[in-house]
Length: 207
Image 1 (cartoon, rainbow, N blue to C red):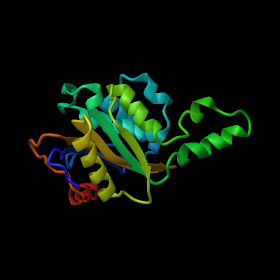
Image 2: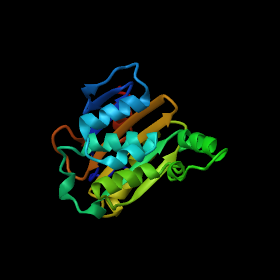
Image 3: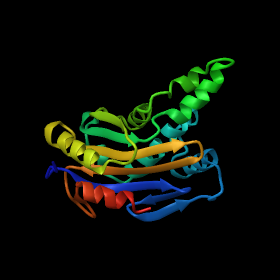
Image 4: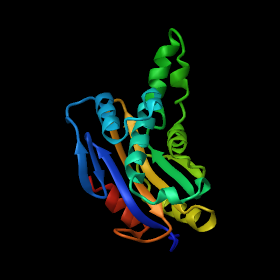
């Protein structure tokens, strides 16, 4: 299914300490920097005014950063809260945080880490930041499933009140990470293209 209402209107890729928006490199950091250092530098570059960021786990920070870049200068603010949804996926679920939480259990279980032992918490952090209240789902799969994501997003756009949807892949395990996030809209404009599995696959591999 590919709804006529669903178009890819923007994309953000975060990989190898570089940030790409709509296919163009917009910022890069020391390629040898550890992920924690890179995320802090990216936060300072693209936001810098959201103290709760520092309490998040790595998965939430990466997804939050991608959303921050993706929605900037978009028309998403014209939508009602319930008209913006989230559809994300990854391979490792919340395992990166689970491992660190398990280590704390040996002495004193960390409630701050326990909060992030579900992968969908990243969607909660993005929603709180931007006030999104629409449909949201988090999938766990071996790789980015363009067919599933395009069909599911198209169905949501066609059968619910959604007018915008953030769709993407947010994966992190220790120092390895990759993030690709797309803004899906109900109107074609600018560089927009119809939402299809082929289009998502092409953009996903453009890094």
